[in-house]
Image (cartoon, rainbow, N blue to C red):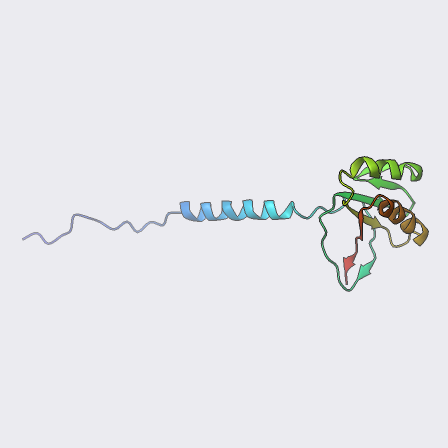
Length: 129
């Protein structure tokens, strides 16, 4: 009488499902990280208690040595308005201001006034405390 089974249980562990899981997590984090678009320019932002993330349509950066950038493109102070007009497709666009904290308030008001005159929503970028 032969009592042995014909089906043997394989004791090895398959890493295929683990690899699929890691690949899906990698894709998820790559996609969600692209939704936050920080300014690529080195600006020392002021801090605030509440900091919300706004998806920018147009980003305006003013560095501490008063260089102006619209969407990482260097412009002069006099051409900021024309560059904003060109980049704002709709009148209800969003302009995010990345202003260095050592820049005089006059420059912030100048750029915010231009964006407001173009009927854009103006947001100031800050870092949380």
